[in-house]
Structures are given as structure tokens and as C-alpha cells.
Image (cartoon, rainbow, N blue to C red; front, side, top):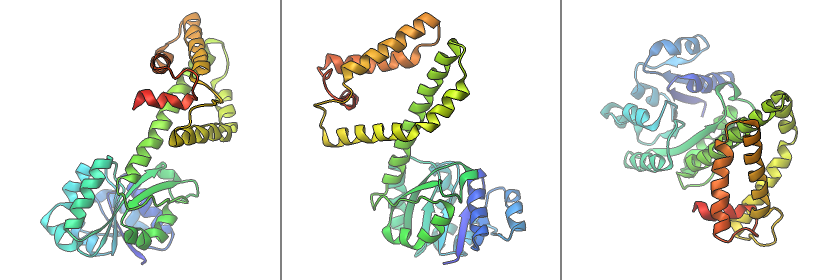
Amino acid sequence: MRNVSVIGLGSMGASLAQVLLQNGYRVTVWNRTSAKAEPLVKKGALLAPSAASAISASTVSIICVSDYKTSYGILDTEEVRDVLAGRVLIQLSTGSPQQARDNEAWARVHNVGYLDGAIAASPPQMGKPDATIFTSGSMTAFQQSEPFLKCLAGNVPYLGEQVSAASSTELAFLSYLFGSYLGFFHAARILESDGLRVDAFGSMIAHVSKVVGEVIKYESEVIQTETYDNPLSSVDMCMTTVELLMEQAREAGINNEFPVFAQGLFKKALDSGYGQEELGALIKVMR
């Protein structure tokens, strides 16, 4: 299948369409503001007059708009519903796991092969080996779409027919990422308070990122198997580090919100008797 339609031409949607064009696909596009399609039309894309005609032009359509609510407003019209049956719809808008379930139920009613996707990359990264698109939903829809999805991103894991899996995995990834951001920003204040370079520290983190990944992998296995005994890093041991972060913030007079948050979780774990268990036991107080 060399025909693909792309609905939504914001930064990400336009990047997706451009990568598909570069890989020899016949791309039909539609956007509520048609002027956004002009650069793509100059590169060979076909501009559809409506969302329904864009979907009619291809067996597979990608929708990539701001959120699922906007997507639903575009798709749940009589004109679009009339042309959906038997086609594949790939949802690459931002949404929650429950919204993915709701979209799948809606697609099933209209006889649409539905694949939910979550992009873990920025628009300039699309088409590159390190870009990732998590996918879940109809296996048939994934198999039909896999060749061009792998043009869009080098890593396209199919997480199974549980349609919420892609959204949940993306949110888990973002939770990890944002937690890392907050830790790094506090780290930057520690360095600034002692006249040290933040960029040098960032380079060091990039260098040791594989080691950090191995630590996270180990803790994930601990949590999955519920084996918190014989710790490599106990809750009690790590609480010492949290207290040191608190002390440094006091001494340097810097913001302490990050270590205060961590201290609260660690205290709950210690009060619950998890002090001599592996660090991953913190999840028990978060359940």
C-alpha cells in the first residue's frame, strides 16, 4: 500500500507527511487551515477538500491533531462515517488510555481497523532511527501499516491488542522523563550554588546514561517480581542521600521543593517498615 492520508498538519503532522513523501508514498493531506498544506503540496502531496475525501483517498489514514477531542470532532461526522468502513485509522493525537479505549469502541461500531499510537520524538526526529512510535490495537491494522510506520520512526514497537497500551506506555515514559527533568534542574541549582558548570554536568550525564538505564532496568525487575529483600540499595541507605540533599539546599539557600517531595515519600516508606528493602519498595507507598 503506497497511498496514505494524513489529517492534521501541525508541526508533527506536517513532519509525518513530509517523511512519507520522501519515502515515495502517495500522500493525501487535509487540515482545517488549508494554507498549512501548501509547502507539502509543492513537494507532491495531494490536498483533499475535506477530511472525508482525504480518508476516501487511501486505505490507511493517520490523524495527528492536538488531542483526541479535536480528533473526534473531525471524524465523528456523517460525511466521514460514511467512508470509514473497511479502512484503517491510525490515531497519533495526544490522549489518555481511556480515550484510546473509547476511540476503539467508536471505530468498532463503524467497522474501522483501529491502531492507537503515541510518538516519543520531536517533529525534526521523525524518519530517523532513534524516533519511536508506540502502537497498540488491531494486529491486522498494525501489519497493514507497519512498512510505512517504520519509515516514520526507526523504532515502532507493537504492544499488543490492548488498545490502551501505547498511551499508557507513553505516559509512563513521560513520567520518567519529567521526573528526570526535575532532578536535573535541582542538580543544576546545586552546581550553580558552588560555581560549577551545568553544561559539563549534562555532558557527563549523557556519557553515563547507559549505566543509569541499567539501574532503572534492575529496579523494574525488582518491582515486577516483588523481590525487595537482599537490597543493593536499601530505602534506608538512600534516605541518607535525600537528607544530604536537604542539608545542601539549606546551606546554599537554594530551592528545596524537589528533595522535600522525595523526603516525604521516603519517610512514608520508612514508617511502613520498608527501610531494609530494595529502593524499589518505594512503589508500595505509591500504590
